[in-house]
Amino acid sequence: MASHPLRGESLDSMRRRAIAYIERADRPVAVNELADVLFPDPGRASGVAPLLIRTLLSSDERFRQRHRGRWELASRAYQRMPLASASFAVVDLETTGSLPATDRIIEIAVVRLEGMRPAGEFQSLITSGTTVPPLIQQLTGIEDSMLAGAPALPAVAPRLLELLDDALFVAHNAEFDYAFLRSRLRACDVHPAPTPRVCTLRLVQRHLPFLRSCALDAVAAHYGVPLLRRHRAVDDARATAGVLVRLLHELRAAGIETVGGLLEFQAGRR
Image (cartoon, rainbow, N blue to C red; front, side):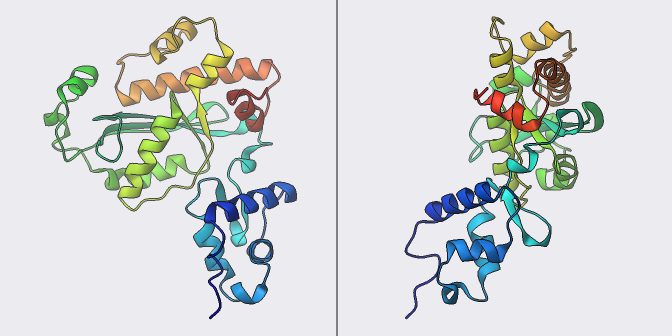
């Protein structure tokens, strides 16, 4: 009996080979071309290559499928994009805790920027299906009674996807917001396309190392950005967007002109 094309080698190993090949190609790669690389014996994957490639890559945020079924690295699509014309989706979440498996989103806001200018905004309380812990009520001012008539996350997902589409994901501590939001959306069977993350906290830590605090309110105060209600999603998202725009202007003046350059600076590689 012939062995299955996805058996015998770990999926992570195959994905690493796909990454290496796409990086060398420096362009979006067609399904059949990837199949030739990943499945050297064409008979093993004959006729099912698109399905096998999709199974292998679609669940991994490092990959992105473009038109005509071609695959590219999610970060590579933005490497040469000028900062001045990039799209950013600035996100803030208020949650019942820090664990997406057990905690829930109770408020969300997204501010979209195009060319560093506001281009759309969404905010909503989210019914959580659970009680808001006293500490979170004290921190945010959000009480159970305020969530009684709020929509559930699936109801607002279409608007969220519209604002997130083809935009870099931005937050102050982006890893938390990105992972939490994607986890809760996946629990609703909603799967946004992966995009690189821009973390204003990391950028501030690298660009403004002299600041005594890199908390959002301290950074907003440094730049003179209004922050009316701390720990309310829309006010935090607006403040984060304002901080981002000021950071981008300063980093562009320092010679960082592309999204790729920004991501390298954020990662400490320049």
